[in-house]
Amino acid sequence: MNFFKETIILKQINHVNVVRFIAGYHTLESLVLVTEWISGGNLLQKLIDEGEYSEARVFFFFEQLCNALEFLHSKSIAHLDLRCESLLLAANHRRLIIIGFGNAREVQDDFLELLDRAVPEFCSPEVARCMPVDCSSDVFSAGILLFMLLTGESPYQEKTDKETLLNIQENDQEKLKSRMKGKLSNVTQTFVLQCLTTEAHKRPSISEIAEDLANHEFSDEKTIDAKKLKYLFTRQRYICRIACPHSDL
Amino acid sequence: MKISTFKNQYDLIIEPILQQDQGAYIGRVVNNVDTVESRCVVNVVKLNHTDIRGRITSQLIPVFDQIVEDVTIPIGGTAKFAVNVKSNPQGKKTVKIKNKIPKAVIRWSLNDCAFLLGDKNVEITSLANGESTLVLSNWVTQGTIACYASNAVGQAECKADLSLEKSNLERNYDLLKEEYRIHSGITSRGSYSIVKRASERKSGVEVALKSVCRKSVDKTGIRQARSSCDFSNYMLTLFKVVLLG
Image 1: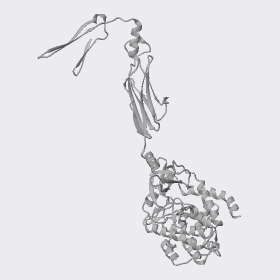
Image 2 (image 1 turned 90 degrees about the vertical axis):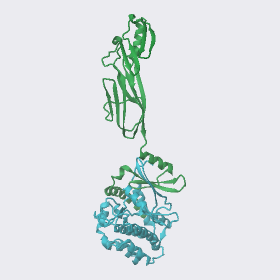
Image 3 (image 1 turned 30 degrees about the vertical axis):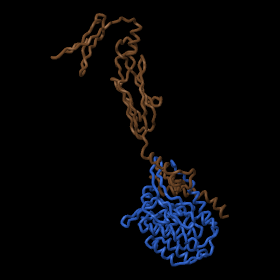
Image 4 (image 1 turned 120 degrees about the vertical axis):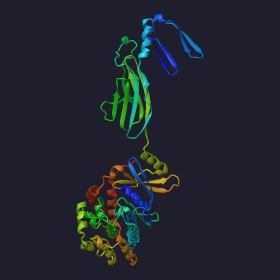
């Protein structure tokens, strides 16, 4: 958790879909980051509350995620920790806000960086292989999130983290296709698979994805059941609860 | 009998005084212009044994020439205290010593608790000339430092306050508390951090405080995240059965 980098990066970001930095305090026991309060709760919780939702509903939020990432990537900042907990909603339940910039870093073309910490379920093949990362890793993680929101399933999650990482390294596209078949429209499937391209250099940039999104219309039909998403959400909350960091707050 | 001078002050010292030293004494200052005099009469009184013992005893109690002074240090800093006790290394227990002060034993304490010998953070040095120093290193406790000098006749003490100054980090914490009213309860918990809800005292605007433990800042890694995930996955297989039927 690089608090200092997180503070530096958040200070230079001013975007409607990114959490707003207010102040940073270094105290005796803790490093405290003050940000805007986001009262709309987690995106997953919101979709679960809706019971059933459409592809268009998911892409409404995904588009905002793309906008935020496009802004970050234009400043050569990679988030590198996109996951369900990173996506919150503003009070009106319409504006998506990205949080969790603990892993974020400024990516330089002439300096390759390894990512030493990540949640396996959401990491890209290059992270799983201990290869240098760049902004395209965010595109892969965004693809995983998209897959989750559309199917209620985690695309690579296995029983253990080791198996999960091997699964991501292998990244069997045919397996992914078969899991989406019959559940999602062809256009949507193409979007997901584009994001989940194994080779980082073949992956479309977030700008290209955002541009493609603008040219497509997605089904308004409420075909996605939030039941499976409930399991993902419960698991996410449980993972958070077993960690008990100390704080002097 | 001797005369000591210091700047413009002249002292006549008669030690030990005897019966025949009794009489009038004149101090006379002469220069080319004038002469001035100062007179006094000295009476020598013979005392019995008890009186002598009492008078000598009062002189034999240890006396601090230098006393401890208040000290303020940062947390984990070093504090140094020094005293100087009028003492006589050759002194014995009884009044046989006559005009000599018995050697004093010096003890130091903090908040009425004597310092333990062998504590690596405490260094006590006592010299034969009556000097004694107490050095506290990596110190984090404040209170009253006391120094006791005792011998067979009596005991003298001097005290000072040892205070810890607030570090910048502590001041920051106070500042944070002054700026924001932190609500009880944790809003969310991450692997290395917790998030609490707070409101700015001036404006009432709500904010989120994400607190990362300093100790965890340099210790985290992908392996730690993995281990927590593995455990949770194992436990959550049960939940999956319940939720998905």
